[in-house]
Length: 100
Image (cartoon, rainbow, N blue to C red; front, side, top):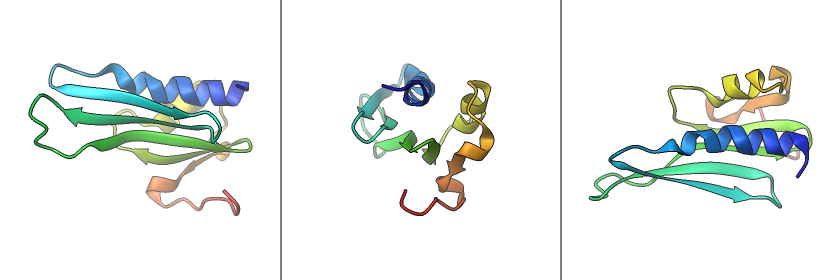
């Protein structure tokens, strides 16, 4: 795994902390350089499962597909050294580079 993928994986998986009434599950597809954290309530499952946060790499660009947190992933990635101009907030309508 290259350094950029390591950073993205680490920062996405940070959200997998969980809570007393939550089940939080991290997912990774290393071939696609895609990382996500799903969340569900437990034990009753009254709410549908939701993707809390998801990001993937296309070359040297990080595409954030979902961010349903109160601590934006983009801020964590920038603090970890990824330039903001290499991050696309797809969930917020920023254009995804062609071919990504």
